[in-house]
Every structure is written in C-alpha cells, then in structure tokens.
Amino acid sequence: MTKGEIIFEGNEKRIFATDNPDQVIFHYKDVAVAFNNVKRARFIGKGALANKISAIVLDYLNKNGVSTHFIELLDSNEQLCRKIEIIPLQVVVHNRMAGTLAVRLGVEDGFRCHNTIVDLRYNSDILDDPLINRDHAVALGLASYPELDLMYSTARRANELLQDLFHRAGIELIDMKLEFGRASDTGEIIISDEISPDNCRLWDEKTGDRLDKDRFRMDLSDVVASYRSVLERLEKIK
Image (cartoon, rainbow, N blue to C red; front, side):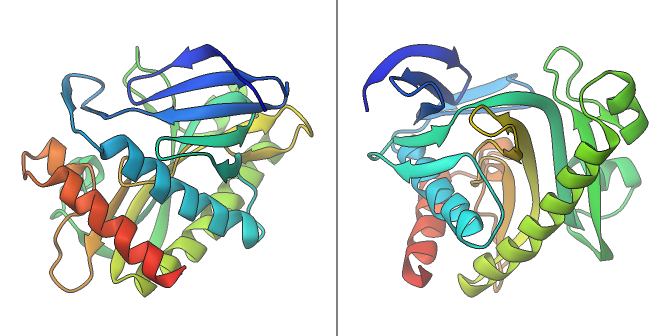
C-alpha cells in the first residue's frame, strides 16, 4: 500500500489517496476546533489519541456487525479506511440532553431522558449544520427514505453497542455525532468518520467529569489528559 497525495484537508484531519482506489489514509492532526471553527487551538498528542480511540471504537463496531470505513491502524496518527462518497448529513444520537440540545429545549445540561433522541443535521459549515427532518433531506436529494431508515437504525444499534463498551470502561456515552457515506467498493452505506471525544460527549460515570472536547469548548483545561484517560480505559477492556 502506497500513500499518495492529499485529497481532502479538514480542520482536524487530512485524507490521503493510496494505490488502492477504494482505500484512503486518515491522518489525525493535533488541532481542536469548536463553534464552527470560531475557536481553534493546537494540543500536542491530541491527534494520536483521537486516532487510537477511534480505531478501537470503529473496530469494535465492525466486529459486532455495524459496518464502518475503518480497516486498520497504521501508526500513531494514521489509519487505513475504505473510501466513501460522503452523504452530507449528521445523525446525532442523544442519551441525555446536553450542550446545544439542552439550551434549545430549556433543560439543565445533562438532563436525563427516558428515551433515546436522534437528530438529523445538514452537514454544511456555511449554514452552521442546521437541524432538518427526513423530508428536507429527501427534498434536497441527500438521501432516500430507505437510506435514511438504514442510517437511523444503524445509529441506534451503534449507540447500544457503544453505551455498553464505554460503560465497561467506566464512561457514560452522553451523545455522539455520526456521519455516513457510500462505500466506493460496494456502494453500501457505512459509518464514515471518526468516533472519538472529538464528536462524542463522554462523562466519567462516578464523578461526572467531562472527558471530551467540551473541555476545550468550556475552557476546562486538561484536554489531552482527558483523551488519554479515555484511551487507557478502553485499552484495558479490549
């Protein structure tokens, strides 16, 4: 496998082509962004931690019947992934109401609900990732109703699996943002981006301490130490 040119560069990752047209390399950078890139900082070691955490989580999903783009970990900051055609939607699963959802609905941060909430967002930086519904997504040609059904059911199944995985590590999965794409080799719709403290809220089950990007958003310090704690706990239960 040969690493080729950069085919995409985002705020926190670079994607490289390979000599296999159906595979790419994800490189995780030591950068954190928040509030649609309004807040930005560099944390040495953060990229490697997010890469390794995401590799563990995505590999766990693959092994439990939920297909993702992850193939294998290559080194500290890089992983080999299946190439996908991006579906510009975010499926956000909430086990508690926290962050902007809590503000929008006027409840305390961390409000414990009796059901699982699934939101759909249009993945557009220009529009600030607005909430949309299924009919909007179909009207915009982003996905069909059967494809949306698959994405919702996949998100709920991934949530069930990851709640258990994180629980065994003493961590509560508060919410997570999932992105999907169509695999270039098979056309199937799969989870197609990282799952890490960058796009999940993860709270210590005993103390309630935040172990995710909220530490950066809320100026709580110890961003890298918190990510390292998540990785170390997951490695113990692998």
